[in-house]
Length: 160
Image (cartoon, rainbow, N blue to C red; front, side, top):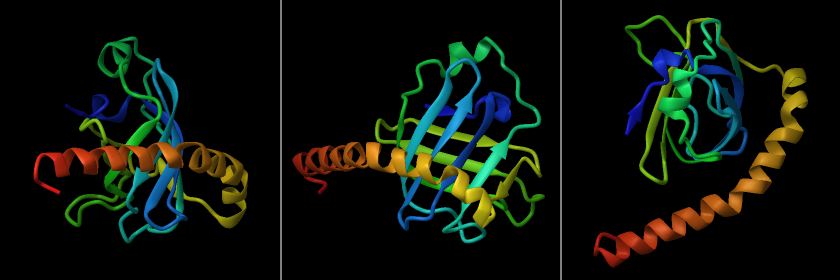
């Protein structure tokens, strides 16, 4: 399943934290369903790797249709980063782009308008340190367990 969240209009706000190499944790608030925790394996792209980004969607719509389209989205989102960048393509104007795959093989992505996301300063990062730590500690075991299940499944299929 590929889902673009109505060109990002159903993404309200959130943050993503890549300060621990190989992991991205955070929280994104979606229309209708509210806050969703994130724990993804991987890193941001080089333009923001190792940093923390915050975003607030200037085109957000709290539309009931969101419930029909993304209402079954897992919470938390556990998976892998495909592309997270504030400058995803050299031929396009820089803009926030977030794309990931869940361990259940769901594929999600959203794009926001230029200026809707920014890299946090040291002072701004302190404000989300506790929440990032809580998400990382709460979900780390679940991500590890999911990875073990996937490896066992692939080995059982002879692809391991």
